[in-house]
Length: 198
Image (cartoon, rainbow, N blue to C red; front, side, top):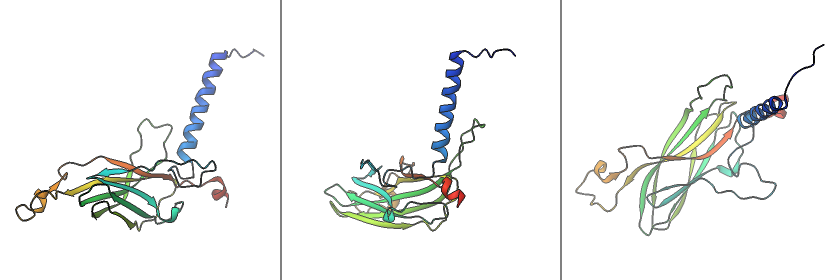
């Protein structure tokens, strides 16, 4: 029987590729929430929550009652808007839920997220006022997907212009091109090994 001629560099390369593949698999199919605050952290570490800032208003999104969302759940969110300006603010915030299929390791084309639900929430705040809005999606989350919940600035009413002299379309700023958004929440609906056995 001939001895196998596998060099040490070749073994190192194989080990690195296997480690990278295992890491990618765990990240893709991880059943727990990936967003900060979904599960209690054992070390007590605190994380900055993603925030959208528009027209002097800071906007964050969280799952109501800090519920861990799973496949089949109908998500309910709390949108918190805080006006940091000394003037009133009025704007629209777009909230979108998208689902991303697990990555196929044999495919070179990344999967595109599919939009599941969208809501345009009107926000009107006095100077230095904070409000919390409850948003019920009313859709069941699909299984084995990475769920992305994004915030995006919509139309902003320009309060510095006279209301009677211009129509709403003219007084509205920022509605000609889409504004960049932020991913407020991301989590997976893949079943954990314990759930799959049960």
